[in-house]
Amino acid sequence: MVSVAHSVAFRGVEACLVEVQCSLSSGLPGFSIVGLPDKTVSEAKERVRAALACMAIAFPSKKVTINLSPADLPKEGSHFDLPIAVSLLAALDIIPRDITQSVIAMGELSLDGKIVPVTGALPAAMTAASEGYDLLCPEACGREAAWVSDARVTAAKSLGDVVRHFTGQVPIAQAQPGEIPASPQRSDLSEVKGQERAKRALEIAAAGRHHLIFIGTPGSGKSMLAQRLPGILPPMTAMEALETSMIHSVAGLLDEGGITRNRPFRDPHHTSSMAAIIGGGRMAKPGEVSLAHNGVLFMDEFPEYQRNVLETLRQPVETAEVMVSRANAHVRYPCRFMLVAAANPCKCGYLSDPERACARVPQCGQDYLGRISGPLMDRFDLRVDVPPVTYTDLDLPANGEKSASVAARVAAAEAVQSRRYADRPGVRTNADAAGEALEEIATPDTQGRELLLRAAERFNLSARGYHRVMRVARTIADLDGSEAVRRPHVAEAISFRLASPAEA
Image 1 (cartoon, rainbow, N blue to C red):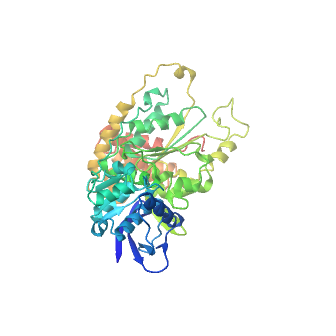
Image 2 (image 1 turned 60 degrees about the horizontal axis):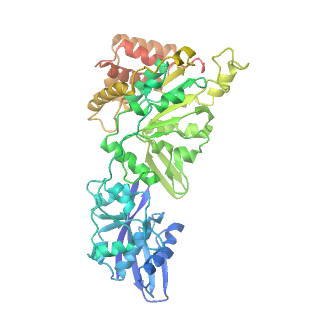
Image 3 (image 1 turned 120 degrees about the vertical axis):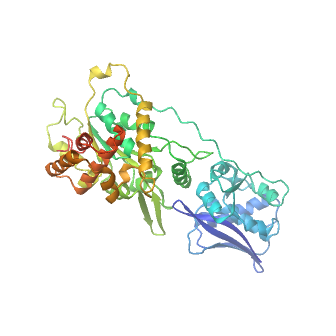
């Protein structure tokens, strides 16, 4: 007779249900696992043997066959140890077979029978809740999985605890969600001296989730400004927090206890590979663009990234999702992020400084920023020149506007957008609006429209650039509390769209 337990196989952030079947048959003693397992899953045989021996359970002198169904779905990861052990214990009539059929189990076994934490508990709990199963997971993963409100989560320390729970000897209490950690003290925007235009651009970008690029000399405050962006963004909604945490769970980045409402801020080094930025590797793991989902991806020294890495950003920036294709996997990850880039105006960094610039002006700047292709540069809604800060500004006290004040305006503008797009699926902020929705909500008044048409003709804006100006103007109007998009809003949006002197 075949005993059955269940587990999951991960396809991106989706946890696909896997039936773990165990058969004991006569013949030469052996232990085999079939169903397209990878090397890690195949090695579960030895870990299960040792764990059973540690519990003084004799391994059966029969032919043991474990089938992971469906057989055409690749099975990867050490989390199959626990469901294999559970199905085998059920086949030995040590735990009731009817109970194991209603459980999704995941966890790695150590040789002494302890259950080691694994990645992906949150998406596994989502699948368990939607399919009507209980979830059995390591104790360290319980508080993460319990955030799924409809899931019944049992978190066990060891395989012995699992046996005692299923046989009714020592039941394990249902896991409870971990506490939401307090937000860390962030650097305040008031610490940035001068750079009022850059601060204004940061506020507009935060309010409408617009992509932004800073171009300025070394030490002018580009990184300092970007690092203060999370402090003016509103906390994630419950749904956004769950979406982001599922990605971080698959990547193994969640702290014990799980979910946080802080928006992610990812700042990869410019030597990062395409797999690190976009996603990939042997198990098609999420990259930085997906780890920044619902948050900020800050790419400092933007032109220094490999050209092929920069070009692959064009599609995720537009579609808010990325397809990671490998020989044995085609995985789709969400990646709705704000791209904030920083770049020097040229290789030496001092193109705009006549005393320090190299002799190759303006060719130095054209060659350096030319590493950013036109189509990619066209996807930045706001382009901001960040001039050097004067010594006079540096000597002033830090008395600029606090992040809390800016965050309040950003939150008010976002609330307007939430009401505006409540009945438009897939549109959350002004940066997402397109087609008829954009025409309806962002068409300027007569004077504003005339200005926009003249600017489009004068500066040869592309169709994408034209629509991005409309989106930014709509956000500026929301910050201004205006129902209509007026000429001043359009004028400010155009001013942030024009090429910087360093690009010209």
